[in-house]
Structure formats: structure tokens, C-alpha cells
Image (cartoon, rainbow, N blue to C red; front, side):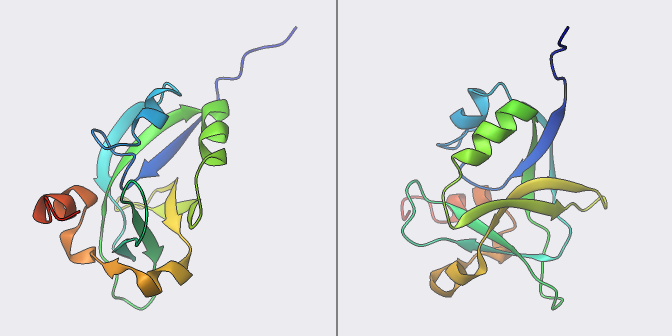
Length: 139
């Protein structure tokens, strides 16, 4: 006899997968459930990546004290849904472990550090939505 797996994995998203954003359907079609909106621990820099469609941000952990907390949505997926989701994440984005403001850790979007050389630092906006709102019509 086999039992269906009930294992779930939480995933933090920071940009194009947020509610109302163009790639959120990738979570919806995997029956993901929004758990909460919160911030990362203040140890990240946030970048608008160049030449991405749809436009996407990248999150990079920093250890030099210059980091800030960035707003994220945490979604819960089945283990199978998480696996199929991760399989379609395009480089330079990666799934790693994010530190949240409450001290917990969750899987989430990061980007490979080499891409920040050609990216705009948007950390001061604190979220992808704030950045998009400020630059409405320009992106």
C-alpha cells in the first residue's frame, strides 16, 4: 500500500511571482497557497535585472552590513509542485535559503552574484511592488 505524500515546502518569492504579477500563474497552476507576506532579514541587496522578460528582480545576500529587509510572499507548495516549479526557474535566478526577519529560514529566490554588475540596485524601495509603482510606465 502506498500513501500520498503530504510533505509541503514553503517558498519565498520577491518579484514576477508575487500576487498580481505576470508569473504568479506558475504558483497557481501548482495549487500553491499564500502563507504570508513578510520581510527578509536585513542582510540582502535587491536588484532590477537587465534584459529579463517579464522584468525580474534579483536578491543577493550580503555580509558587509549594507543589507536591508525586502518584502516577500511565502507560498506553500506540495513537494511535487515545488520540484516542478524549481525545474523551470531560469538562470541567473536560483532557489536557495532565505533568512526572514523573524529568524526563520525558507526556500526562496536568489540570483547569481555575477549579474549584479549589469543590474540596478533597487534595495532602497524595499519591495518589487514599490519599485514598479515608482517607475510606472518606464518598465
